Length: 315
Image (cartoon, rainbow, N blue to C red; front, side, top):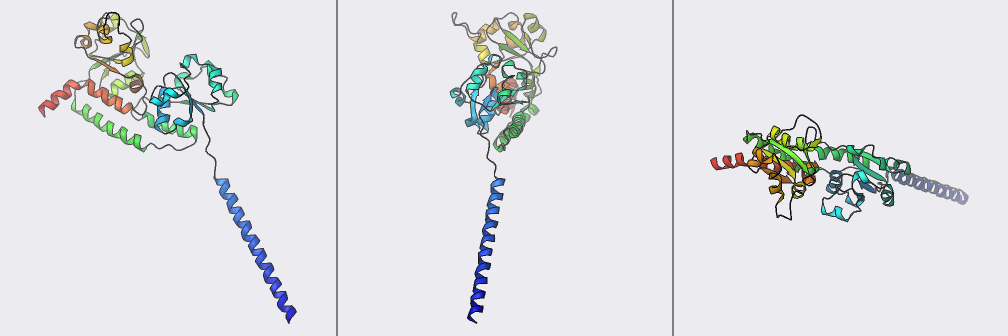
């Protein structure tokens, strides 16, 4: 009888051991499965060769990944502490490689850049980002960045701001009937002045703000001539503030605006006669980044200031 009791005790002990081993094996399997589901987020070292893209990386909290920028990346203030590679047309391959990037972001205008042609062979990922000239363009860029960076990007705050500015813009345009003729002039000193034509950021910005872009005969930019000014008869001249400042004559103590009005043909336009010159910061106006809805709203307010003032007086 005693031997039978010992036999059953041994059997019970064996069953407990098997059960315990089975449980441990199951737990180990679950841990292994869980580990397989967790993927490490890639650490990006980004060179951004476009001011709008750089600004959006900051907007979405990705600035710590930026190791290099181009000359157009001058906002926000933090960009000034990042190595600057200069103008996109004068890129140095060795300077880029020294930053050890694994991703280069650029806009469509840089496709075919010779300085970048050999970098992909060194293992650097090069991606083109399209920046649409629309109020919601920055949200489209966010979607592209999500795909490239393989991570989700929070855009709720930006969406809310764009929506609010869009409502104010629509209110201004619904209250005004004038669509002033606007000419955008790009200047780098009095000897290098160009006017913007079709399919440019200037045409898009002017149209969105309720203006009438006067140049429709050509695309991109062409040199400014007195004949063009007399032909277009703009009611408003739009410029970058840096461009207007580049016209300043320090020797004779003349401001950029005074110098602009002295350029042949300008004083013979309604814009020159009424001194309707609007100057805005370059990236703010042209970038179509996270501040674009602010810029377009500001431009619309400036273009329709007189009409809006009259409306306010009536109210």
